Structure formats: C-alpha cells, structure tokens
Image (cartoon, rainbow, N blue to C red; front, top):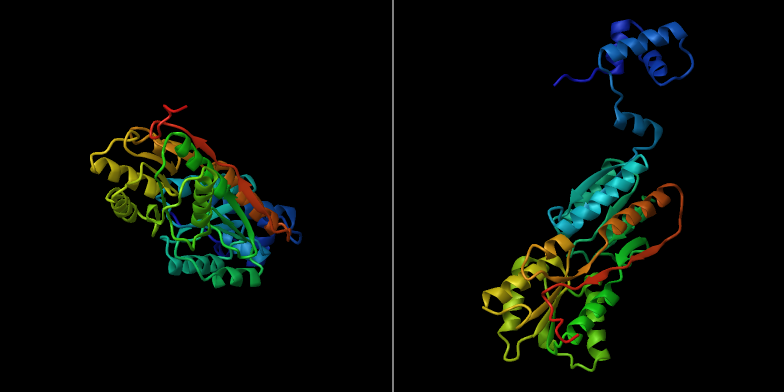
Amino acid sequence: MKKGISQREIARIMGVNVSTVSRALNGQPGVCHELRQQIIRQAMDEGYRPNPFAMSLRYGSTRTIGVVVPDLSFNHYAHIVKWIEAEARKNGYMCVVTDSGDKYSSEVECIEKLVDMHVEGIVMCLSQDTVDITHLQRLQDRQIPLVLFDRVADAGCSTVTINDAESARQATLHLIDSGARRIAFLGGPNRIKQAALRKHGYLEALRERGIAIRKELVKCDHVSFNSGLSDTLELLSLPEPPDAILADHGLLSIAAFQAIISKGLHIPQDVSIVGFMSDWVSGMVYPHMTFVKQNQRDIGRKTCKLLLELINGSTEVKHVVVKASLNIRESTNTSTY
C-alpha cells in the first residue's frame, strides 16, 4: 500500500516552505492564485490526503467520540453501538469503540486510552464489576462529556435506560396471569442498578397479587451463561421447584432455557420462562421465548444525541427512559386467558 505524501514532502518537491503548502491547501490567504493552483495540482498528483488527527489536534476538535461496552460480541450491545454510530456519523462524528470485557479494570483502561486519543466525549455501559466510580468522576472533573446507558450508576451524569422496574413487573404479572405461582428471578448482582430495579419490579408484582416471596427462588449472581445454568439447575432441584422463571439478561435467559431442557422438562408445560433479550434471539430457540423487548435503536440514538448536546455546550443533566415492551410467545402458557 502506497504511503500518503505529507505537506512537508510536497514543499520539498516544489521548493517552497511548508507553511506555504499548508496555506494553499487550507484556503488561507498569503499565497498567490497561480502558486496555489500548482500546489493543489501537485498534491492531487501525489495522492495527498490530509491527516484528520493532526488537523483536529491543531484546531482543538477531533470529531470523535468514545464508546465503552461490556461485550461487543453480545447482540444487545452490538445493536446499540450500531445506532450510536449511525447518529454520530449523521452529525459528522466517528466512533472509537472499545470492549471492557465486563471487567472494572479493563473499563478504566478503556477510558484512559480514549482520553489519550482526545475524544470529545464518551458514552458507556458499565461493567458488572463496577462499584467504584472514581474514574467517572475524573472524567467530569476534566470536563469531558459523559453519558451512561443501559447499566448506569448515580454519578451525576446524563443516562439512558429502559423502564427496568416496570418492565419486570409487567413480565411477572404475565407469568402470574398465565397460572404460575412459584416464580423464580434470575438476575445479575444486586450492586448493578439495572438488576436491582428489575428485581424490585418482580417483587412488586408478587406483592400486588398476594403471592408469597420465597428467598430460595431469587438468584442474583454473576452474569454469565455458566452461572445462569448452575443457578437454574439448583432452582429446579428444590423440593418445590419454580413453575416459571424471569431472567433479567439475555445470557441468563438462554442458560435457563438450556437447563430446563436438560432436565427433561417441557416449556411452558412444566416451566414457563420470560427473558430480557432481542427478538431474533428469542426466535432462535424453540419454543420461541416470551421476552421483554428493549428498543436498542432508541437507546443508541438518544445516548448519542445527549452526548452531542453536552459536546455543543449544554450543562443540563438528563435521565432519558426508553419504554420496553413485553412480547408474548410460546414459552409462557396463555391457555388461561
């Protein structure tokens, strides 16, 4: 691949100062018309392309934003990033996307690298290990615009989330109305605000319908396929196993589904299940899973819009809530309706 020619090399070829080449190519005064045209023609012949990073650093604007997600291979985050990028490009920005591996230490490292690259702002979904938010406070102290989405913390910055508690409440009510009475909750650690809110919605629905809360049916653990699998198998081994499961994460949903099948049980005849996931993943299993659909397009676009507002001078902290919807499919019993 041919290396692009620099302004310094163009100046050497033409026997003029670098400053003259720079003024000619950037349309600045101080260069006669004839010489300007010669420099432009020479630059075109040599395949010259301006270095966007050098120019942006010179003029104080990189036109880039940083994105940090826990796991880019996970469909949910990939779709949100897609819409963040689309909104950024529409406004003349490019994204530098990084993956924290769902670990706090990597999340801190991602932010440091993005700051070193002089991004104009950062949007991020916190890792499930994140408790200390000092790294977020440092960004704010340096007046680097920050917006959190999906998994968020009370860090004094703008956020974009779904209606976590209400969507979990509606999903649990659906299971109750479908005839379930021993409903288990499979969720992430309580320190994650998202998981805590979804568990709150689950408990609220049980209280609303007068169903006893059983601690042994609540599993709040590390979010991974293996933890979801082992927790579900443990639930199914109880003397009074659950007749329904609400899983608050896509990985936990699929793990619970596999665990139920592995025990020779039938969905939804023996155990109903509802998960938080995307529609196409719900359709990959059979019976197709009833799921809480999160509007990833709106989450991504609104997250980016909030960040661009901050980059353009806004100081207002906003907390945007994108409404999720319950999509009923074959993994829950609807015969009682």
